[in-house]
Image (cartoon, rainbow, N blue to C red; front, side, top):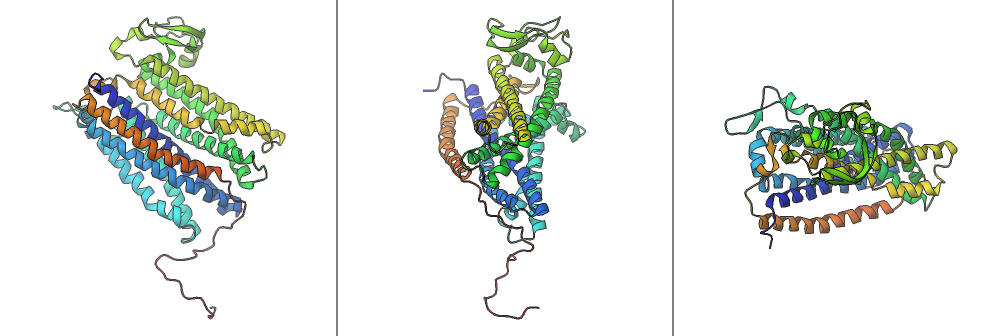
Length: 467
């Protein structure tokens, strides 16, 4: 039934589906781990029970998100061996150690302290528990660092050699492989995106409960903290995104030109195409709404700067223009909507109606999932924009896949879709149920000492002598 389909396209669709589904959870867990660290620090510093209640509230959600992220991530390495074995064989000497470093540092660190963080609040001292929370947050950051190092090397490969078998092998220094030209920009952009994603999700939950009970102290506190994050971090992300775009123009110009919809070169300054319908066959953007000179001003910081066009590159090296053109606009549009929400919250805070302005709460509720949509759109722009290469400029996607027939790939794709929607659909439903419950208003002080030491059986109750 699937014989007429292209096995490479099916393999790409399968990887895109699974990695898009997977990245939602790490993006949330990176931000949530840091949020939990801040909540526990504030709790220990101030002794205010509202922070303890919020910590416990979001800790349950973090545990589910973290588990779903780990399970969905296992599928990535599975596909490297099944659908992309040629890529694994050629690039494995470089990406294999990097991914092993992620396991040996980040995953081991998280695994070592996660149990203490989840179950040890009343069993270990408050200092040790806070250390465990910090280590889990640090582990999520280290994990993001290594994964972004792998992906950045695929985007802007450097520091490698090619041996007689055509394999990419490490050069004289691993640092050149880790710190490629795009790595710092991509790491900062991704981590800030995770923080914004978490802030908007927390703000959406807080808004949901404020619409039902404006006096709930937990809802008020989480909403206030989330809106501070959106107001402060959203403009920083726009600045970082601009720097990342300039770096991409330098190292992956075809990607940026596809994103901008520029088929023809612009010797006297390029316009910014706001909207339109790219037509790669005709090599133009139909129904374009554009602003003259603004494209060069953004990309070169000079309205009269010349820019090349896609026609300056071989047709076989173009990425799919229509996909990246629209995914980029979704990401940027949501980014400016986040900025608008943050500024709106500052206005409400200044007027003293942050917890009373129902329209602000409704807007925050609607924007709650926007961070997840934005990060998926951003990854689509990045990964589809790298096509037709897996290792940019050096190894094509068509040369990277396993020698599999289309029906075999289609069967596994269908299996993934079915299992994901049932298994992870149930997990997401459970997460929404947890978020739908309001944080409890009762206040609890941080324990001054463990209530029960591990491995010690409590003595029977009864009278005794106090020493």
